[in-house]
Length: 280
Image 1 (tube, rainbow, N blue to C red):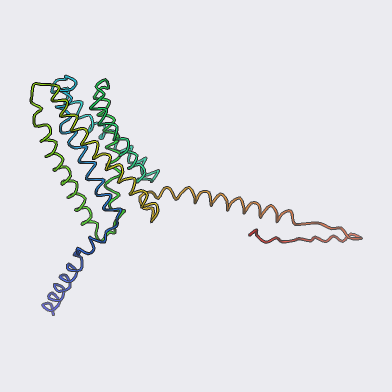
Image 2: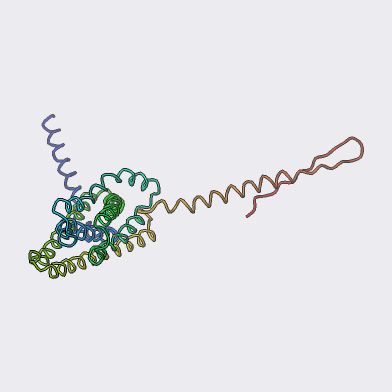
């Protein structure tokens, strides 16, 4: 009997494992919002990570800082992330509009690239701190949204797809940026800055793709199930609750005024009350 029971358990485990496999058809039927969200992840990290990777060298060539100082300024992005991540997480949990905040961060990141390229009057530390704030809030909104957009049955597969697209985008972008900046070792500063300018235009385009797709994701999500911004449903419910309370108070007030006292001859007093139905 033990042998039969163990054999039966092995068969059931194999059937369970087979039923847990995600088929290609299930992957193909993932919602449009998920695929657009994957593009958001890919394009944002493809513009962010190459900037950080080449930021130190650019600050040295553009602003004339030493290698150590330029590294400090470039690394300020992650210093800001360490400081504001807990506070940002608490605030986002309170307002519960992850999708809208994500789109705002993507849009606010767009000006960083032309400012780096064409505004040397602005201190680089200001731009890196600003980028650190937008990146931190964006990342906090970005990854938890994947589990909201897909069902738990395909969550692992969905996470794998997003990580794959992120790595693919970052890898291809780095190859392109390396090709563009291949001649930055030249002593001609004008040529160096021209190559950096091309790099910033490429990164700007990727950031705009991320911002545009995140806005489309929000529009589609709000029209369907409103999974990314459940906090938006609080305001209509609050108005409905106030309206119900006001109607209840009016009904009670009208009911109290409906009681009339009529005196008859003698000492007899009759109390006549009228009940009013609730207004339609």
